[in-house]
Image 1 (cartoon, rainbow, N blue to C red):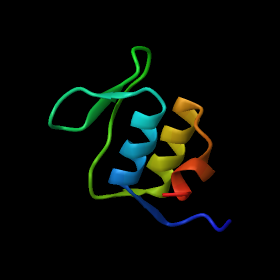
Image 2: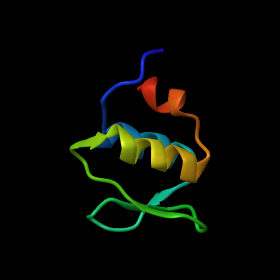
Image 3: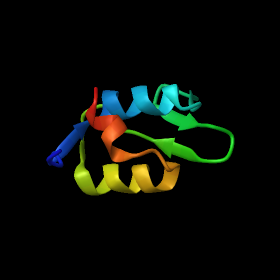
Image 4: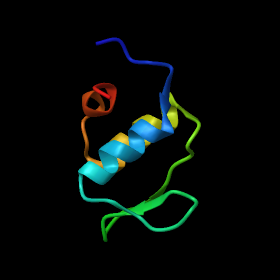
Length: 66
């Protein structure tokens, strides 16, 4: 699958919530108890997205499915 140049923040949030993260505030901060992330709801650059994927251990392809 070709890597997109940007990923929608909403898609990142959906996958993170599905994997046990919780929304902590209106700023879309998510936490699973060990890792804390803040995701922008607009488009997220691929470099930031790749860092989120590495940090959480969630495969990039799971984000692309949405």
